[in-house]
Length: 234
Ligand code: IPE
Ligand code: IPE
Ligand code: MG
Image (cartoon, rainbow, N blue to C red):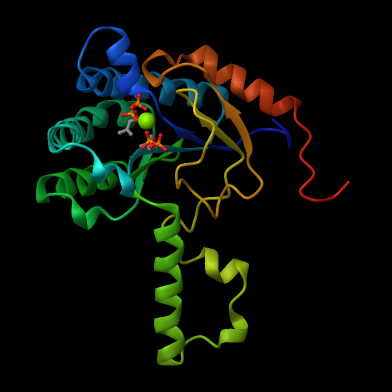
């Protein structure tokens, strides 16, 4: 596949609510359809040769939404964690999570752990869901853990470099993002993967997430391949 390929694709799956409104439905209907779109994009990512897929599913800021929408999202998440099991096993997907899952109820946490365990020996695509995830918090959390180790005398401050710091992030065994896709038309990062996107290529798609197709993923990858990444060099 060569060097110019996005091994790590991260997606901000935005626009569920606006899509549903456009259909004359409640926002929650958009979340439901959006959760099924994840299946076809996982399959497409595998077919394209992507190795890591990180999906922004619920941000630390999303708690600001109305209680009723949050309640729906939690029920949906609980069900999807069970429903995705067959697909992930069939497709050799290894599942993971980034974010503070302590804030979720016990059933969701059990379903998360169950899916991680069921897929832990799979060797194909790694799918990471960002759940109660915030990029700034991830960095603060790492700083706090490193500070604790310094206090204990296990780390000398002079040892702290980018490599060491990155080992304290949620997914320390996953490489930086190559390609960041955002659906829904907004052109912003919304606190997603701040550390890991420092040299990512951005593709903004003017479609709502429920409308996103395999061809859209393929087009984003083709766009990526046409870009010239310089990483500050020439
Ligand atoms: C993304 O869709 C899903 C979540 C943030 C949970 P939105 O719910 O943000 O949909 P829009 O952007 O309001 O249309
Ligand atoms: C980002 O979308 C979060 C997820 C897709 C989970 P938002 O809809 O929360 O982002 P803003 O509010 O438009 O920045
Ligand atoms: Mg949104």
